[in-house]
Each structure stands twice: as structure tokens, then as C-alpha cells.
Image (cartoon, rainbow, N blue to C red; front, side):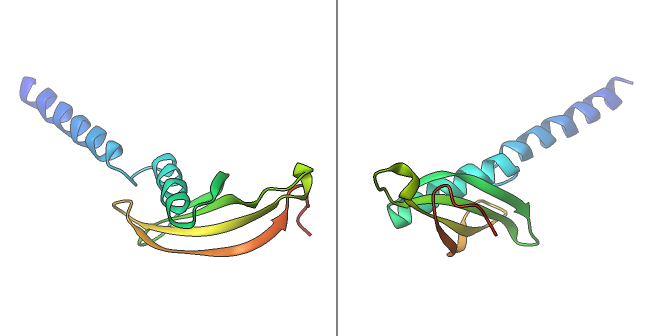
Length: 106
């Protein structure tokens, strides 16, 4: 019985360690993608609009402020698709669309 409890406890600990590895969860992937993209393109990330698991790791859509204007509703934003591997390392990124703040999708 004690051996069984230790085995179960060991697997729970291993599962917890896996969850804490960068890029293992959608929240970690979103945070990492936004952080990496900001450092590469020197524009502020406004938020993450999508996160999905892929065969290679994660695909994250990050919304970025590209050009601040006054009034703010005329500022230009862009959505970038950022792909991370299972370890949270950048594979690629590209701009999917560019739009004015407040403009609705068609």
C-alpha cells in the first residue's frame, strides 16, 4: 500500500514538473510568444487573441500596437502568428493582418 502511494505521488510530482516547463501550457505559450515577438519587432503587444496546440508545439496570435495615433481609435494594430516548439523556442512569426483600432472584422 505504501509503495503504491509512493508511485502515485511520484507520478503526480512528475506531472507537476511537466506543467511548469516553459511552453507546456497555453498560458505559458501565450506569454512566451508575446514576450519574444515584442523583443524582435520593438512594438508593444496589446494581447493574445488565439492559442492553439500544433504537432510542433504552439501557434499563438499576438495583437501588437504598430503605430500609435491621436485619437487612439485611429492607431494601427497588427496580428502576428507566432509559432513555438514544445520547449517554447521561436520557430517562426509573420504578420497576418493590419487594421485600425476599433475596426470590426468583416
